[in-house]
Length: 298
Ligand code: GUN
View 1: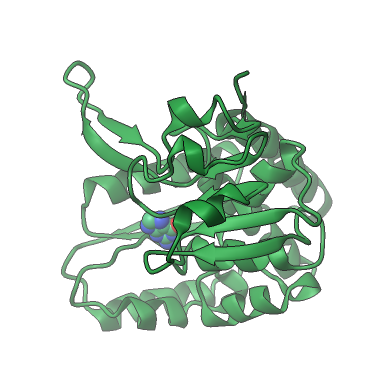
View 2 (view 1 turned 30 degrees about the vertical axis):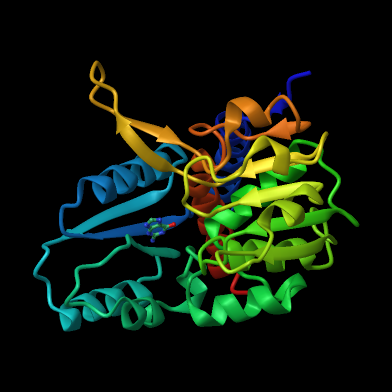
């Protein structure tokens, strides 16, 4: 038996179609559309490609989109002033600062300067705190964990009472997805274990998982014998393991030995085409949410 593929590419299409309809409805009812500013400092090729995709997606949904590129040597004070400008711009509902920032800029200071009501990345401590409280308190769940949860729900995986094992404890993926899966609510109510580099027996924990979420950044870390038969496997790893000579594109590998794992688990996300496409999609969803919140004055 081969596992069912959970396609982030297909699920992204579904969600973007829903969001596009919502933006049209917003425009018809209020005359307004979601406004997103993307701020890119410097010229890292990876960051340029992420930002370009964010901008393209926002425009395709009918957003008011500002791409505000800044030079590598912008001062911290000037960047903070720019954020302040957008914090006070009523047509902007989401502020995205592409990370990483150059070394001379304190990224914590910059992220903390964003108005939490416009922090569609969900990285501001206020939004991290709200995520921890759960329920109606949650304003903007961070985009990659929110995308993972959507993949789990839309693939029809039961989460209530499920054993979820999260491999990795980063602030961007591991910690927030663990909290989200343990909360009360749809796509949650799970029993969650976080494992990491100091965990004594990774394999035995993973083997218990009805839902295994792997965000370790180590190619092929998870071996087939670590996987519970019939389980759902979400691979968050995006590891560049080489270059395709013909296309000049990076060869990507996940954190799970995909070819072997798909013979054992019930459902699995591929790399690429699994979690990856979901992050930008959820950024768009958070921006639409922010727009409603600002337009309706809630
Ligand atoms: N750089 C890599 N991933 C992300 C992300 O999700 N948000 C931002 N702002 N920068 C990133």
